[in-house]
Length: 334
Image (cartoon, rainbow, N blue to C red; front, side):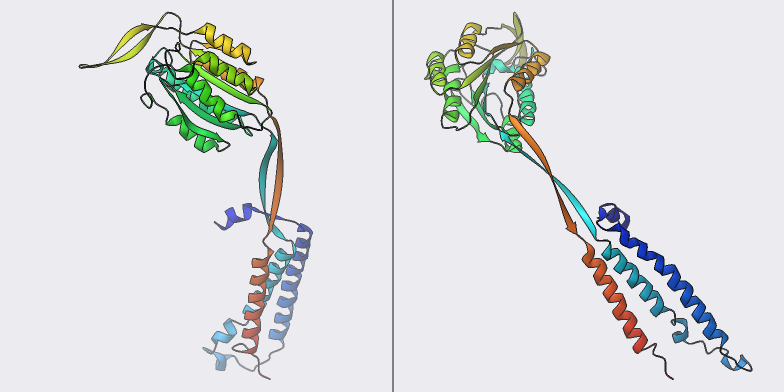
């Protein structure tokens, strides 16, 4: 434990450790002086002293040892032991982003591993981790839309919000217009220079209170860029269907309104992508990450905390103990 503590310590003025060369000099001087004093005692016979070695004589070197230790602690204090803490601060112009994710029943299709929805959640969490200074919100939609998490820079809250996404939270359906309009509403009061919606869906619009065209026009009015992602393989995909006998897999046709998604993306200044597998979806988010760069400056602030005080207190305590011993129990009488 002591050695692990020392590993965290650095010294601001280590040159004071050169004073430690005085310690062997003091030991040599003390040993020589002690030998001389012993040699100066002459007695005719030592028989009368047999058995009279007292506890005082056995402790006669203790004051000197205490002084040596106190000087060692004083030298350590003069060397100014410190602990160092590095703090990283990220500053810059971030982007306000809404991740708008389809949670309709078709997102449980297993043409992605383990499903479209789980794959979408995984890439969303990775995307969140890559955006250091951006505010991000989570909007989900199926037959209606809901704000899963408002704009925030708290990565833990965002990751938890994504993790809690699942099918069945909302009325089933695919209300692309509602999802986009809710996302726009999250951004309309934003003061950020760049406002972005990443809308991910695997179907065609079939409900909602606001049509996709109207939602697109609202996004354009607030200068919000929309990237759209169509998710699903070509042809047919396996869907889990609940039956009285349990869940069975059934092939259903993949139907994505690519024309609508392209129109929304192009007219708002964004881009349309098609993801047919997990790797493709991952690469799409990486490309969007590259297109929407934030100005980020990371500065490292180093803080030093002085730790000389305990060393100085140990030295003072040892000197006081030496003083008490010399002038009380180990006091020499003429």
